[in-house]
Length: 315
View 1: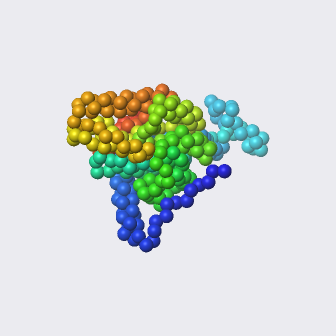
View 2: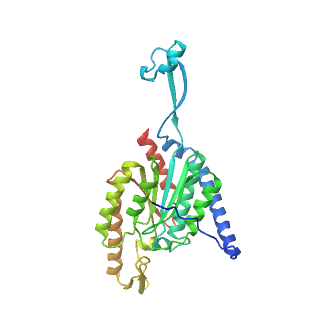
View 3: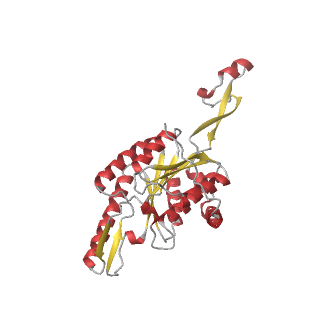
């Protein structure tokens, strides 16, 4: 039996820290609401439509109505043919799956990748709530660290943002496949899943990428999966600053490299680019949309472009 983990506790003694957390969450709430109002109003609703039909009412049959919609009970009772009318089921379930492994805390600019993920998740959650949809949250490392069932309301969204920013994971590795398995067990109704990660899969890279692809394929058959990749500029290229030590945040392995050597920088960039490209190719080969956000850059145009392309494909 899968247990839902409790909310992150905030020490009552540490009032300064609690005030900092609350202030940060409220500032992010204001910013995400502004982004939704300025850029995404109407786009979300036009892309993510209801997944079924709800019964609305019956009315008298008129020539041209589909005979399959005749309500035979009402027809027999009244003596006049009646048909059932349906409306689209509007409410959706949005599940935010966010990678909080050790590598997510890295950031070479003002914010970390985790803070970027939290802001993007806040915008998506705020858009969902505006359209009366439910939003749930899974935070994962190489284990599922926290699960908040889908809910509604401003306080619910505040909690999601707060947990994404400040939850302290117990582990540092990454296992996206395990998190997808968990989502398939707890979310039974077809939902929209935003999988937010830096996709730092570790070694052996190709083996883990194939395993992730298989799990994504299963999940995408049940749900509508949208992958969101968050990266940092320093993960794509190295500055020329001489000899430095680089530590893998997840494995703890430390490697000394000479960034003053152009060949070293070129090799680093090539490996980083090839891994990103292979990951993107495997994800997109499943028909899964992939958004790519870079820390320190304006990511809203990419999100708006995604909504636009989705609307065109479904239109």
